[in-house]
Amino acid sequence: MNQILGTFRDSCTNVINETSTPADIVRRLAPVMGELAKVADDFLEPAHRRSDPNGYARNLIFAAEDDTLSLFSLVWTPGQWTPIHDHGTWGVVGVAEGLLEEQAFMRIDDSAAKPRNTGIELAPGGLVLLPPGAVSTFVPNPDHIHETGVASDRPETLSLHLYGRRLNNFHVYDRQAGTRRLIEAHYKET
Image (tube, rainbow, N blue to C red; front, side, top):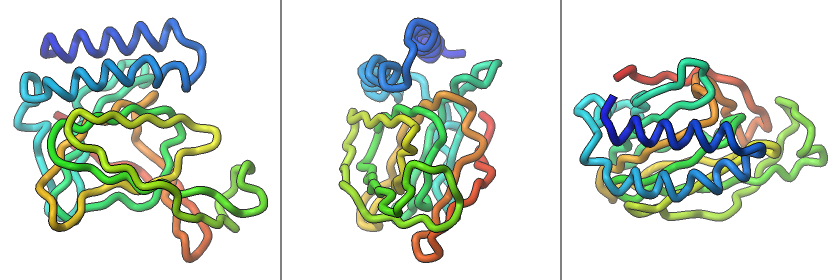
């Protein structure tokens, strides 16, 4: 593993081992991610920059052996967006290139605190524009529900996504149907 990535992984592992809550973990890791995003050209390999014409590309950079930590590069070509989703864990996102948009959603149904898959009402929340070097964080409970992507009139974007588990599945929401379902998250091994 590249020295920059090894140092980053070790820093993340130390923070996780020393910190008890997801909010404190992301607070401590946000500046670390900001520094990593600034030097992305020094460690990203061609496999980390793979895009996909059919949708945004998720490229695994590393995952802890015990699946408590994973880092992905996400490559977005113009007009590509995630579905509305949550992660079920904490996360720290840093933008290395381009401009990433994040549209938050809020649960407004009468039992928003209850985990259920039907009867879900979502309303748009805030919109965040993340330029190179920007960092965004989220924690679960309640789940951070959002969609992210790149406008069709903007250039390709590359972002780094650190999660508190190997992110191999997540919930996707259908606003019109008022439902959510757990899907398998596909990614490319690097």
